[in-house]
Image (tube, rainbow, N blue to C red; front, top):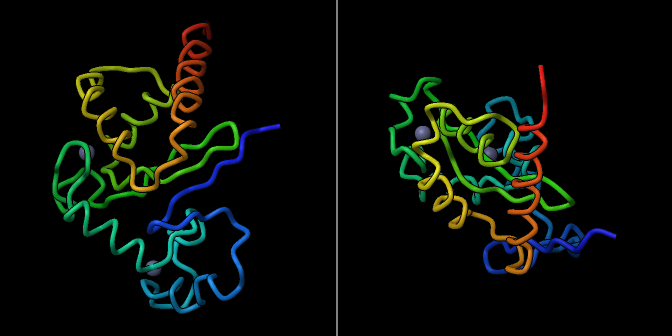
Amino acid sequence: MLPQCPIVRNGHLYNGSMKSADRPSRKSQTRHSSTGKTCHHFDYHRMTCDEYDALRARARGCCEICGTPEGRTGGKRLVVDHFEGRGIRFVRGLLCDSCNAVMSCVDGRKRWGANRRWEEKALEYQAASWQQPAPELWGLVATVQAHRRVLLGQRRR
Ligand SMILES: [Zn+2]
Ligand SMILES: [Zn+2]
């Protein structure tokens, strides 16, 4: 059995079994879309438009690791970064494409290169994640990341 993973959103526990009255309305999932389709942030991260706006406000339009303004990042966009593993999933913040790759290294999904100089900043950013897993789950997050790094190190080409 995997541990339960309650995510704290806006001070309330969100575990997918909310009463229907507490569920976000359709309108609060489509506001950023000109075609009325469900926003990516809701489809993939279950963040309402208000929550996405609040995350953008926290980031102040800049990558939350390197501080590059959105318009000057390589991809001219900021992406929603999240951790996923062992039944734990939480949104960490908004990043440029290169810092998103930094987090793939932190997560043990990619090998570090010259971008390792961002490691310390990346760990500070992760600790200040937008959605916080239950405090006792941070140890498991670190274990998952360390385990993947070991697997990556053992892989031979
Ligand atoms: Zn939206
Ligand atoms: Zn960045």
